[in-house]
Length: 354
Image 1: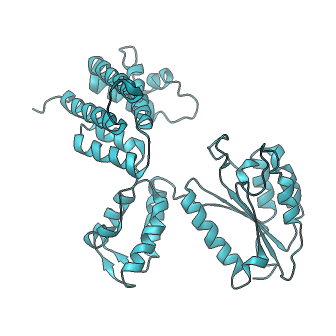
Image 2 (image 1 turned 60 degrees about the horizontal axis):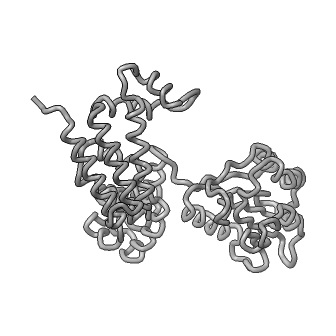
Image 3 (image 1 turned 30 degrees about the vertical axis):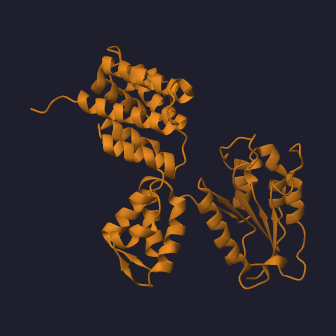
């Protein structure tokens, strides 16, 4: 790769740290090629360039590195980890200025990941518009490494299986997707493991791959909520275990999800609330926000009724007390009993079939 054939800047962003790391590894392999990585790559990290009071991770370090000419090579690759700490127009201004006339021998790689310091915000902010515009003008690119959601996630998953050296029959593909659940970051590692077990071109079944998959992955919270709303006790408990073990979620997090779900129902459980629009207004959903949560809450409230909803709120309140020491039970047992009761009593709330 020559100094004139590379982009001036690449930004890698994404919500899954594993996928983000894999994308960085793949990008650096491509940019370095067969050359000496130790001469080409300089990595800046908040872990390496931060003072005890948190004031020394200056974007000036990044700009200085980008403006440094290469030594004994035709290019330099400057990798800036935790770049999301420069997420405002003001903080990003020196970098925007640099991109107005970037050094042609520098490939700047920004890894847009969250601030690793525990006292800082854990949500990854958006790339500021001023920086996005500067990146575009400089011929750079922003790569979203996330698997996406809905149809996009399904397509991403199918593409990962397609490029794997082994083949999956339909049942194996479905089983793997269900097993991975919401933890798409596990998929590259699982596929690497399977590629090491089976010869290239082997067509595998669900039974073939099951012994090598490990514990089932996390699921998104609404899958648990939907199972409870269906009155599916066994399915709800299975999904709960995946959240607790595969997703390493604390029982209090599970309780918060369930409490939010039923309190929304309680909020719209009123004869005065007629229709999705009124329910959305009651829940404070305004503007262009989706009214689907209001529609779901209203349907649930109408299905369960005030008496059963009141019973559920008491169950949630008791579980909260139990998780804070009122009952000498393991926290996992508290939420297991709660979920079983909610799902079981939801099922008994359904009108009898005629």
